[in-house]
Length: 174
Image (tube, rainbow, N blue to C red; front, top):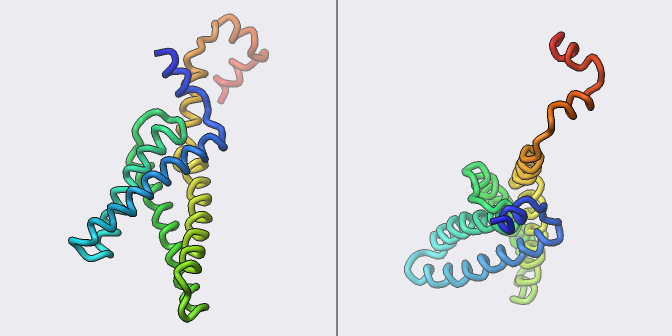
């Protein structure tokens, strides 16, 4: 019990979180690529891609909430919505990169297409990591810190002795 509590209260470093982000996101992405291929044999590819993208984004957000960013609990609806928004922007960025490639090169080879797509995906992934860490899951770190501070009771005599003279009068005057 104490180990689980201390793991939740220990802030995750950026490097550790990024490694977890790559592991979770990469694992979900790899599984998604197989799922799209399998589902596309029964439905149109665009529909298969949309369904798998929605499911994989939900799964990845849960993994990021519980594991990547050290929250240790389920993602909220707000976090799911923000994560979906960042995934949509990343998707648009990779589509734009491929569209630009098609405009610049009449018939790009498979290697060039893969290089452009993977480069755009990597840049979008780094940007998405920053958004998830600094915006979507940032409150979890603040809440954890507040919880740690709140669980340490302060003796009333220590608090009064530490407060500057006249603080009570200022609080009542305001």
